[in-house]
Image (cartoon, rainbow, N blue to C red; front, top):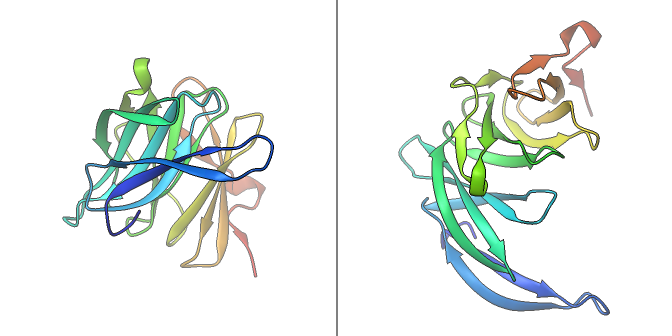
Length: 173
């Protein structure tokens, strides 16, 4: 929730799809704007801003819809979009105002650390990120230059390699 700096959790009825509110969980930032859940459903990661030019990604353990904080790590300026790889090893965070991607390592208990201690350049204004379902590749939507950037990633370290030799970034629209 952007203005209240928290995350609302709901249960979902398996038979009707109806949502039932559980609770709001505060984040460490002042403006919350992205969330990703790992493929196992054990952890949630929430991107927020401190309004100081620093962004955070909070890690939460999820048990019966209740989110318990596991700590936060800095991630550029504004981690506007998040995605988790299919092995629950990495969180990829787009940094809209820094024009790059931060790769975070998911450790024991869902605790995050900066996997490479450096951001990876993207196109201008990255606002979305998706991971190829089998892993190994990410795709970043850049609204500032109307492109999609494609990267391969090292499955051990999370290091990104732009697929420029294959035509990335790709113009859209």
